[in-house]
Amino acid sequence: MSTMSTAPRTATSKAYDELIRRVRETHLIDSTGQLLGWDQEVFMPEGGVAYRSDQLALLARLAHESFTDPAVGDLIDECAADRTLTADPLAPTAVNIRELRRDFDRRTKLPAALVEEEARLSSLGQHVWREARAKSDFAVFRPTLEKIVDMVRRKAACYGWAKGGEPWDALAED
Image 1 (cartoon, rainbow, N blue to C red):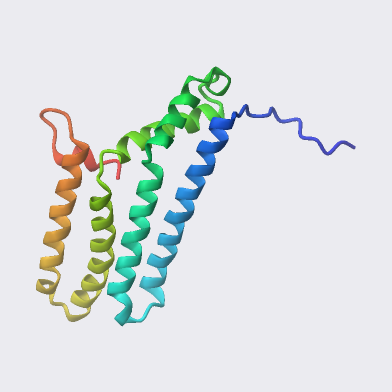
Image 2 (tube, rainbow, N blue to C red):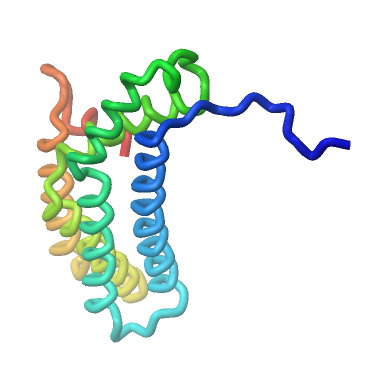
């Protein structure tokens, strides 16, 4: 009995393999941040919020810079031009390349500092919200919420939206 798979092998190239390696690295950074965020909500002592917010902000910036590196865009371009990877638009490689292009184009509209700020504010905001909710004193959360709303508006402006549209349109994918 043969142990070889009869499934069709997906075409790859050195550029595609390098692209996937870089994307995987970015996802490792992202998932580390997600784990730290989970820990913040479940186990982390209250006194660690500021430091954890800095950790999450750093990881968000590093992941953003890793994925938006112009070399990643070049790899996406090279892979998109390779007909062995994209001839079948439903093949996993073609779908990956198309989705990575879309994600790359969207993320490159955001400055790293804004991504870092969003992660920090989200982390700090979670803590302040929990405090305000426990005290039923939502005025405590207001200044943080105002900062978050301002940051989200700036994020929408970076993405842009169609004429006659709303900032929400730019953020709907998030």
